Image 1: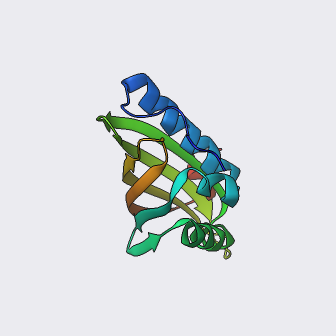
Image 2 (image 1 turned 120 degrees about the vertical axis):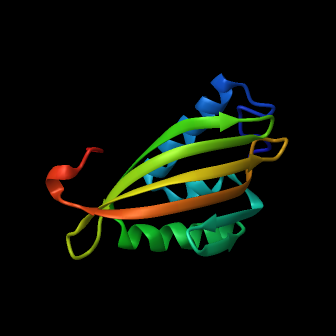
Length: 138
């Protein structure tokens, strides 16, 4: 088990952007284990209207997510940071099992422990049905 996930807080604009890119790359991999390792064992999440606590629950959530959200592609953008917190704006696209495409928009607020693991993740997300031709994240 890793003891630290660099870059560590306190964040600069540069290290916050590095952390964001690492998260984007991990989520786009859809590798549930890889993603879960970035969070504390007891990490707290709010994802839309769902409350998730701990790595095992995160893994279960992500597994369920990608059974429903096919061809997932995510882009994150730096919004702000402080010593151990980062705010991001994001959008992602996916297709449901019926073939309908969606673009999801939202904001996340992240809080990290001293070892660089994300202890809290609060995500507000809205979905918009789009046509295949309206996709931006190819």
